[in-house]
Length: 459
Image (tube, rainbow, N blue to C red; front, side):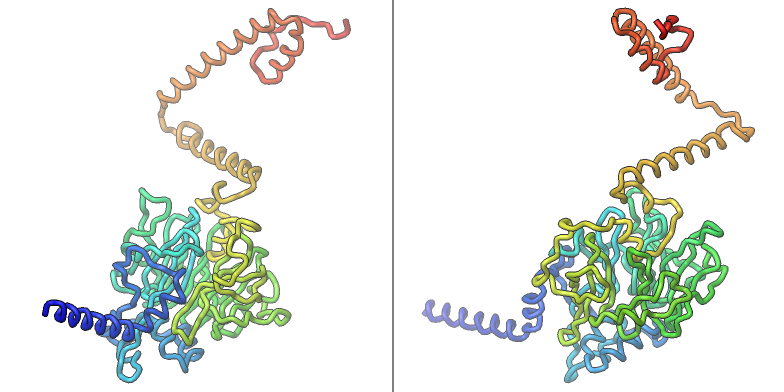
């Protein structure tokens, strides 16, 4: 009797398992074909919840981005619902059943320590070291501005130590400074006045005023440039192109690229992009993407749309050209960029952020593979710090200041120099070939000319 009951229980348990498997067929399909995109610290949740069902109309105004998504994927409602976290459940029904939305990255940046951050389709921030790693970590703490606004995109400030983000409310936010971290990524967001009604932001350095100006794309797709580093002082149209765009990028050679309303990557005709049309020589990349970022080998990673699967997938090119197609990781022969390193972290970051020259973390030698350039930059920065110190501590100022700790160090160094001079004098005294030692000592300023014996070089 007990054996029969045990068999019945096992049979019921088996039926339940089979039912769950059939019911979650989509999840199994997703895991099978996306096993490289795992998640860590997510409470094992790979599904995006419908969090904005109760939001009032108009809180998240429609922009050129939403219009483009609706137009391009008009036959793929699942793709639309997965891309737009603000879509409500009643807008995402198939046979009166809500579409299951899975998590995936939609926008990617790189930090100065080499870590990648991504905005996912739930509007939150996740991270991983390499884009080819399997696991994403997140969502990060305090991802959402105002605790509820999903993000469109993120970038860095010109100094490279704070995140800047644009929400689906089309406002711009910046992270507060974090004294315990190289880059502030988990502090509170602060609203930036003057940067409203935009969907993308970057920077352009203006040498005439020695300031980084804000480069933006408005909610209707126009490219604009701020009059100064203070966005409150207004913006002007910065491009002659009439077509609206969604995002901008700079390639390593200085050409501007853009994602257009067909979600295709295009390049401008020449480097003076403000007075340039889109290139007629080079057509758009045929693969629709939501975002791109360079790898060290100058090939692009792309957030590629897969409308039939209602998701995006990170793929990589196999040739260093913007028109090259994107290939899934499992089929790509060039995932390891260390074999052909052509560009640095700084170039990768600047391609997403914009072109600038004001000093900051992004100008430090740790981001440069050229030792000579790094050394010269460090020398200039040291001289600049010294001049600033002198101006503050006695030169051209009335401040009565004395650094006793520095005085002590100077005294100790003077004693060391005197000791070295005496040692060299003793060596000269007992060395038969003392002339070479004397000359070398003169060259390094250890011995005064008055202390040297009188030699006649003609003898």
